[in-house]
Image 1 (spheres, rainbow, N blue to C red):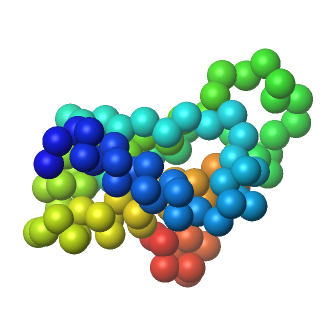
Image 2 (cartoon, rainbow, N blue to C red; image 1 turned 180 degrees about the vertical axis):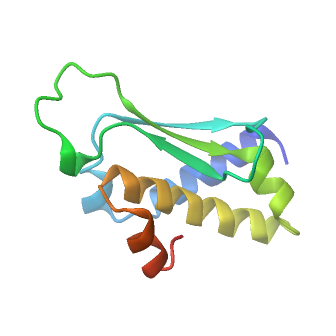
Length: 110
């Protein structure tokens, strides 16, 4: 799969987020890392969740990184890639909204 195709899957997953939640996403960049760090991490949220922000007006954007190589290596088919990208994007966006790991697992997004 090309990086451009994978980025399209990430964009599609973001488009599936309900509009009222998407519009509430604030000061966050979503990136694709095509090489991925060592280990089994599919995505990473770095920043200050919306629920923890105080005076946040001049801060750098939060960052969600989706790790292409890790996701592709963990998948057996293109269908698996699509499903894992969607799950990972929703998981990391959940962190942006202040949802913790255990709650994301409870919701089926862990």
